Image (cartoon, rainbow, N blue to C red):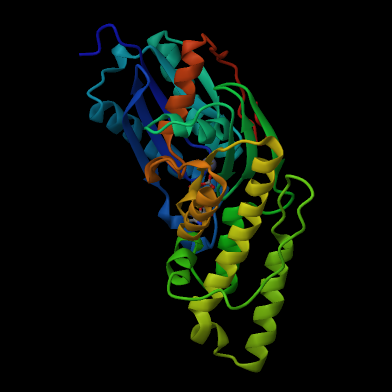
Length: 336
Ligand code: KG4
Ligand code: ZN
C-alpha cells in the first residue's frame, strides 16, 4: 500500500497537547491529538503536569496515529518532531521519543520549528496560498505577523511585546470568572452581545503587537463598574465579552491591514488557536472583501496545536534533505 511512497511520522508536544500524525507523499493520513483538560482546574498550564501527561500519552497517541494511517513503523522513512519553541519539559518528552524511534528504525530525524509549522499548516488542504503571503499566527503562546516568501524562507515582521492574543482572551476571561481556556467561551458569549464598552487600541506605527493596555483597561473598567453594581459582570456578561473580543480583534486586524498595505500583498493566512475565533473570522472576511484579499484558514484540527502541521513542515524538510542531528536540543524561543 505504501510502496514507492515516502512516509513520515510527526510528533508534537510543545505545550499541553500530545499529538502524532502520519504523512505520505505530502498527504496527511492521520492526526491524533490528546488534550490535557486537567489544566482547567489550575486556571492555566502547569509545565510539570504537562510534561508528566505527555509522558503518559505519547506512546498511545503515536500508536493510534500509525494505526489510523494503517502504517507499520518499518515502512516509515523519517521521524519529524517539534524541537521548539515551547515548554522545555514538554518538548523533551516528544523529542526524546522521536529521536529514540529514528535511532531504532535507523531512519533520519527531522527537527521542526513549531511557529514555522503553524504557517505551513495552510499547505495541508486546499486552497493553498501562493508566495509571497502574510501570515497572522495567533495562539495561546504566540502572536506574529510573518512574511512567507517560500516554504523555508520566512521573515517575522512583528510580534507581541507582552501577552499573546490567546493569553489576552484567557486573562480577560479570568477577570470575568470564566474557566481556562476562556477564548472559546468569550467567543460564544460575544455572539449574544454587542461591543458597547470601548477599550483602547494601541497606535499603529510598526508591526509589533501589545495587549497589556487593553488588559489593564478591562481590569480597571470591571473594578469600577463592580464597585457601583456588584452584579455588573453577571448582568452584562455578553456585552462585556463582545467588547473584549472587539478590542482584541481590532488590534489584530489593524496590524494585518497595515502589513498588507505596506507590502502590497493580497494573500493572507491566519493560523493558531485564535484563528478559530468567529469575530476575527467575520472581521477578516469583511476586510478581505473590501481589500481584495484571498484569505486562508486551516481546518479547525490544524489551527490548535497538532502534529499534522509538524508533518507538513517535516515533509518539506524531507524533500530538501534537511535532516537533523540526534543531539538536537529543545529550545524555548525562536524561529529556527
Ligand atoms: O494554538 P493553541 O491551541 O495553543 C497554543 O499554541 O497556545 O491556542 C490556544 C489558545 C488559547 O489561548 C485559547 O483561549 C485560544 O487559543 N482560542 C480561542 C478560541 N479557540 C481557542 N480564542 C478566541 N476564540 C476562540 N474561538
Ligand atoms: Zn501553537
